[in-house]
Length: 346
Ligand code: GZL
Image (cartoon, rainbow, N blue to C red):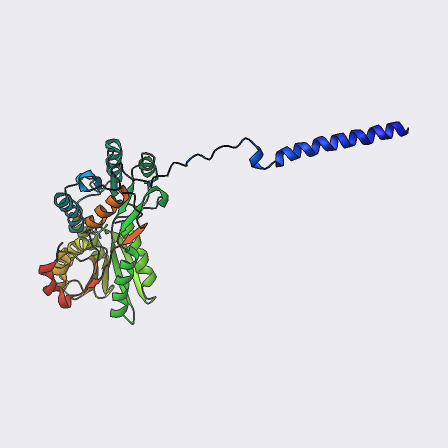
């Protein structure tokens, strides 16, 4: 009996010793395991850094600019800003006009990816529907700068956004109505392209800042064009009596404002009968203030090319850039519109 017990104890100790040594191996400090010499981690190049870094210059830059359209004076000035900058600096501009169609912009971006451009500066016609093509650019190692309007895509898919604070523009317009109508009013809204960052932001900022006693009785899109705004204003005038059913109009850009004026004139409305606030600050908008039609014009600056080009070169040279760069803007008024009009660059 004693022998059996002794045997059991010995076996137990043997099992315990095996278990401990196994654990011991598992717990053995790295030094005694086969040491793997730490390899020099390849210094990760910043995304978008070009082979010419850190001395990339304008001659190295091939900038893809798939412009969304030519729908407004603002857009014309924006396009001119990029073409003038390319002529001045000597970089290669790959330009296209998508006629306000997202599918055309996406095709143009894909063509630029195929071409292997340095940077893509994308002015998105609408906020949604960009994730797939931005992913393709990202996977091709081509950095994207979102220009002007914003996108709803994952921000990790693009390097930066340069443009206006559209919600602030809407807020500034609302503050003009709040000042004018402390006792309340009924107003119309002529909005921009449905689903565009500009229209969505302006409408949101406008509504958030508008006093509760000012009612937006109707809102229709004029797609940011003068031609499309005329029938929208005509339809409004069929439904609502100016000065009676509504006292003012918030218009998302000057081009639609000029279309609205055509319809208002035809309906016998005079300058100043209505309180109209527009956005952009184009020459046409300044003239409308001089003529008494607009009572304020919220600035939206289209001359974005210099900032975009400098950022593109910083990216190519592996330098850090800000994720969101908003342009400084103001509000213009009739009091000094005549004096400023000759100085306007767009
Ligand atoms: C705003 C821009 C808008 C302008 C319109 O940044 O996208 O598009 O306000 C233009 O004039 O059509």
